[in-house]
Amino acid sequence: MKVVIIAGAGEVGRGVAQALIYERKNVILVDSDPDALKSAQSLECLLIAGDIMSRETLNHAGIQNAELLIMATNSDERNILGCAFAKDHRQNMEGVSGEMATIARVNRMLVAREDESEVFHRWSSVDHVANSDMEIVAELTAGLISPHILHTAPMGKDAYISVSKISEGSPLLGQPLIQAADEIDGLPIPVGIVASGGKSSIVDESTEAESGDLLLFAASGVHVQTRISTACGFTSEPMVDHPRVIIFGATSVGKDLARHYLAKESYVTVVEPDLNIANDLVGSNLGNHRRLDVIHGEPGDVDLLKDIGMADHDIAISTLDDDNGAIAIAMRAVDEGVGRTGLIVDDSTLVDTVRRIGLTRAVSRREVSISAVMEHVHSYVEGRFQIIRQAKEFVAMSVHITPDHNLINTNISKLESKFKGGAKIVLLERNREGMNPVTFSPEPSMELEMNDRLVILLLRESITNVEAKLRS
Image (tube, rainbow, N blue to C red; front, side, top):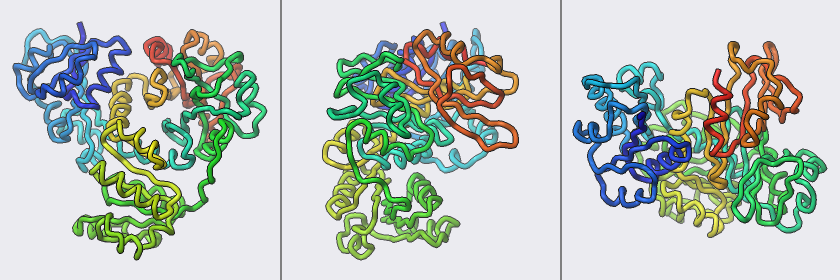
């Protein structure tokens, strides 16, 4: 029997294991830390205590029958080396069945971010690098638009799935959701619902919502986030067009965030406590941008923050590695009157805590890493793959209709009927030669064209069936 081996029973490894168990995969989870394995005991998979860098452990895990090895430890170097070691060991075994793909979770190793994929694959034996940096930037920046949106899942090329709770007084209550949403100018149609009792379903013509339910919306662009919040019964100050942004930490994500906001014509200040890192940024092409200021100093230095005018910024974001320190920075920003605060944490349990104490948006590296790994697990249907974290029975995926794809000229309604109610095509990006791409909510009567890109919302239990219908 084919197996999937996951090395590392931390939060990422356990999250990936759970996602694969939902899909009825035969999962083996390996870790040398007894506490990590104890945390994984509730998972319906085989747990093995051992070092993945041991041939004995690989043999015990059944490496000769593995279709996939996922290295999900907290060490970039160990994850890359583990892929190479396992592949080498497997090639020298007898009775090996088929090919084995490898996925390495890589957080901070610069060469894995910047090296050309085929070059990195050649020297590392890593088939897929799961790096969450750009996912974090897309999710965090979209989430800061409207504080009442619980989760915004980027689906690539300005397509998003957003989750919001619906409250008393919402105009979406009291009639079928699709009908109610159609009466609100500029509001995307709700595509999924999680009832307050926990039942998840795709929205159809008869679906009605109650106060406390979670609604899922699919939209092109982040500008509709405020409309979604308002329609669900919440009010908040709209984001200014060109916010002033202060970023704590010249980390890889911090620099990516700076690039994002500079491209939006914002003024950006980066505060970095390490002098060498600050100087490296100043001397880079990014550091030469006329709307970027780089400050060397401690984020907790009250006098420094007053000198640089933190209170005059619209957004404050911490990208530093210390979770508690990041929360402290965000709380100070709130005290200074900054309207929107963002932070990146490792521990996913802190995300809801941050929301409860009044901070705007937190993103967990580990949670985003789970989706990054799963995207590569599902690479045989080329496109994005996102776990909708506030509505865990849902996932979203995208698929590109290649020139030789068997779905060309297929009617959307006919394709959706094959999904048996477990999935819906919620966005279609049309790419016609000589024209700019256009993303919209498709009509059921439309036919698919070459180079279309579909964004599909589906229930976890439908993944296998849906992917079978989407393969070229």
